View 1 (cartoon, helix red, strand yellow):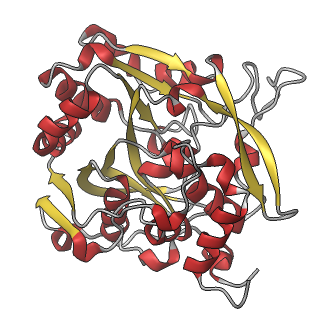
View 2 (spheres, rainbow, N blue to C red; view 1 turned 135 degrees about the vertical axis):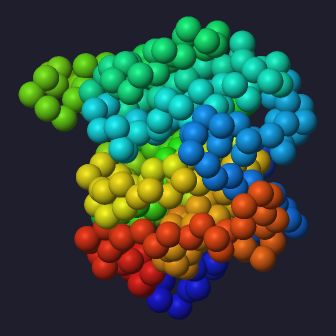
Amino acid sequence: MSSFSRRNFIKTSVAGGVAATMLRPYGAFATASSQVQPALSDVCITTGNNRADMAFRALQPFSKQIAQAIGKKRVVLKPNNVSIDVPLCATHVDTLEGTLEFMKSIGKAEQCIIAESSSSEPTLDGFSNYGYMKLLNKYPVKFVDLDAEKSEKQYVFNERDFRPHAVRMSSVLLDRDSYVVSVARMKTHDRVIATLSLKNIVMGAPVKDVGFSWGASRKPGTASDKTVVHGGGCRGINYNLYALSYRLRPDLAIIDGFEGMEGNGPNNGSPVNHRVCVASLDWLAADRIGIELMGIDFAKVGYLNFCADAGLGVGDIRKIKIIGEPVSSHIKTYKLHSNIASQLVWMQPA
């Protein structure tokens, strides 16, 4: 690998086999070079003191496009509930409310579900802990535990043996009749620098058995496929996030940075009073701006660079049109995870 650039590694890997099993089924497998990168993408940035209002306003510039794209599809609002009892790590209920209010304004609220598979413990317990149930009083939304729904077999890479490993992935998120909305939170991460809209979808898709947990309450014989997608290390997870994005990328990205998390995210970090919200129809452009707002060097975020090189969206900040607040006025430099040096191993030859 030392003789390959990052771009060449992506092209040869996708064309060569492991990732090919995960590409969108267009008849013939698509390669990285066949993707058509948009010339320009719009990203809206809002600020304020009310999460719901910020999310609503961030989505408004895209009203017509969103309504048209949804059509009669089911709208899947995917929060980030990596843990069920750590409020700072999870999507805030007010961000979901602002998103649902927007969907109501374009006549799509009745098509919405809120769906998740938490990394451990029962998903619906997290919904209850974070106050999501109050949304039932205002909107015709349904709550879905992805672990209790159908799944499909996909394959991921492990850096320790360079072999494909089978995982169960949520059929709800893979369904072509689902309009997938990533309602994420701005956070640092312990393996991929930062977690934003794409990672929220990809890592929510692997399911676990009902009754699985990491604690003493774990039901015997149960397992989770989420650990498999981590790919055995920082190289593996960065590659898997990229490869799986061919089928699991969001149709709409919302990133709540009202109160972000810095330091030892995605669970044990500290709050950042940031007061920003980002939205875009181009998830990669949204994540690119999220990285910029967090004061992080984009070149260090492996999976997003892979996706940008493969043309899965706009990663070049010069080709992103900002609607609303300027980026430069709202950059806060997030403290990175204490293991940041080991995370950058993906940049070195294997």
